[in-house]
Length: 582
Picture 1 (cartoon, one colour):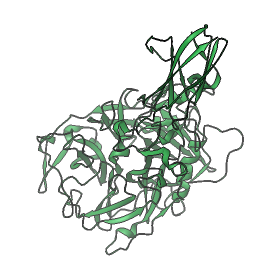
Picture 2: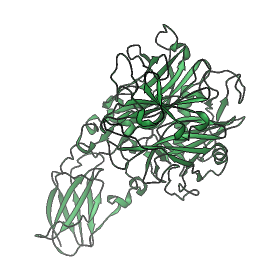
Picture 3: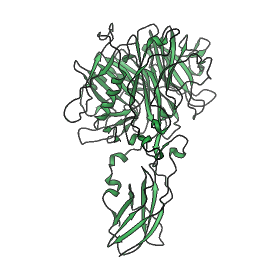
Picture 4: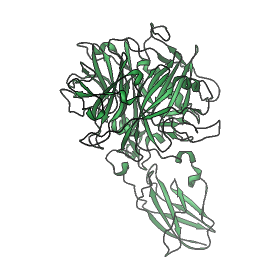
C-alpha cells in the first residue's frame, strides 16, 4: 500500500475545517428575513447597548468584551440616561465576540434580531450560526459544528455584560472537548430559520420557517411558532460558559398553498404590535425560484398569538376572513407589482404613517422605506425613501462579492428619536477551488447596524443622516481578482475546474516523488497509482499542494495520475506520468 508523507495529506490539514460543508445561504440569494414592528405614535421601545473598548486580560474567554447597557428615559423596565445608539460599537461587539469565540460560542451568523428578556438581559436570535473558534484571517473553524438556528443571551451589569450562546445541545463541554452543536428548533437535519417575534408576559413567541434540505433554490415547507420561557432563557444566559441549551415548545401552523400554486404562505416575516393586537405578515412565492414575494397579513390578539384558530386573515377591501384560505395578497400600490416585497422586511409606525423597510434586490447596497396609511397598505413604491447605502456592498471583486439582506428594525436597541436597523452581509464569492469566502475570514457573516433619525419619516423629510460603523472590508478578492468569482450563474455555483497540465516524477528505492503545476487556490488533487494496463481504481491520497511523496512501493513500473477537484468534489482534466521504482 502506498503511503503519503507529511503535509501532502488531508490528515495534515485541520480536520475540523473539513467536517462540515458550508452550503450557500438562501438569504444571501433571497434577501430573506423578518423584523420587529414598532407601534405608530408610540416612542420606539426601550434599551440599547454600547460595548466598551476595554479588553479582558488573559487568554481568550468564552465571554465577550464588556458592554455597557443604557436605557431610554421613561422606560417601564429600567430608566436611565438618553444617549444615541452607536452602530460602530454594536458592530464591534459582535466582531469581538466572534474573534474571541470558543467551541461553545456563536462565531457568526445571520437572521439577527433582539428581544428583551428583562431589565438586564437581551436574547439575540440567529438563523444559520457558525460555532467558534473563528477569526478575520482564518475564517470559521467548524470545530463544534454549524447550527441552523441559535440564541445568544446578553446579560448586563454595572461594569459591562457577558454573551452566552444557547444551542439545542452538543456544542462542547469544555476546553478541548469539541462537539456538534444542534439548533434550538428542529434537529441537525432540519433547516428552521428564525423570523420575527415578540415578548408577551413571561414568554417569547418566535416564528421559524422550515425549508427542505438541499441546495438553492431552497424549498419552503411551512411555519412553526416556537414558545420560549423568558425566565429559562435568562437563566441559561447566567449559567455555564459551555453548553448552554434550550428547547422551546413548538406549534406547527397549517400549511396553505394558494390556488395559483407556488410555495406555502410563510407566516411571521414581520410582526407589528398595535395595542393588544398583533399584525403578522407572511410571504408567498408564486414559483419556487422567485426571489420576490406576495405579501399576506393576519391579525390576532397578542394573548392568542400561538393559537392559530384565533387568527383572522386580510381578504381585501378592509375585510377579514376566518381561515387562511380566504386570505388575499396585499396590494403594494403604485410603483410596484404585486410581488415587490422581499422576504426580509420590517413594518413600523412613524410620522403618522406605516413604513415597509427592506433591503433592496440582491446585490443592491440600499435599505429603503415605503409609506402606507394602514398596516395593510397599499405601500407606495413611488414615495420610497432611501434610509442607508452601504459602500462595502457590491457583486464584484472590489467589494469581495458582498451582498446585504435581512434589514429589520430593532426596537429594543432604539430610542425615542433614533431607529436602529440591523442587517446581514455575506459573500457570494468563491475562489478557483469553489471554496467560499467564509473559509478565509469571519468578517463576511457578522451582523451590521445603522441608525436613522425618526425625523426621516416625517412629512417632506430629506435624505436621513444615517450613521453606521466603519466599513469592515478585508479586501480578500481584490488582492487576487483572477482567483475569485461570483458564484451566481455558475454551474453548481463553481467556476470551471482548471486542468492539471503535466506531472513530473522521480523515483528512489521504495518511493516516488510527484510534482505538478499549481492549478489554483482551494483545489485539491486526487492522486491515483496503479501498474500499467490497470484501471485507476481509488485515489491513494488527496493532496492539497502541488506535490506528494508516495512511499512503501515495491520495485516495478507504475502509472501515476493526478486529477484536480474543487471544494464540491467536481473534477477537472488530469495528467499522467509513468515511473519505475528501482
